[in-house]
Image (cartoon, rainbow, N blue to C red; front, side, top):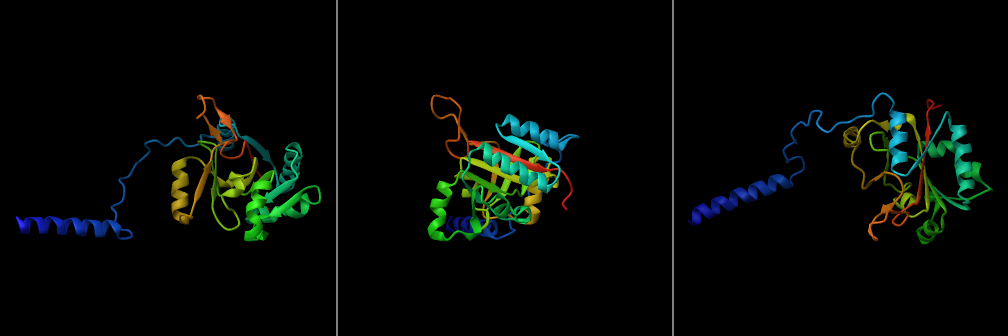
Length: 225
């Protein structure tokens, strides 16, 4: 009996060690096309419809100059004074910190010191971020977390404005997971589908309780210049 017990425990130890080893888990079986919806023939239209259905707002512009003008209008409509600005290829190229000043107080996330960033996030009226992907199937904005794009940029502000290129659209969530897997998983990946919502109180839907009450997506349809 003792020998059988030790043999059994030995097999368990081997299995646990194999499961804990990086790359030691057996791959999942091929899923084929099960559950795949895609974006149809008009990814931009599908993205717009799904985002609006989720309570978000989408704006399509032709080029980067029009994107800057539209962002300024959105800030004015929001009666914003303090704007938090993230970093990234697109946001850096738009040079929003220069183009929005002095009409708005623009705080660049990367320039904030640890002692002042906490209060700055709570005091901001609007957060402006880039996007890593947008998913047409669900109208979802996808943001990876990094020093220049903290989660607070899209979670603590009352209004979130995300800016991206049309080529950052992925048709389906399955396509997103494939793309993220190839690029390498970040420390945190936020999937934002419309404004924050909760139905905890008397089953009544309320927006803006756990995050932004307004979410804008500014999509640049033209080619990158």
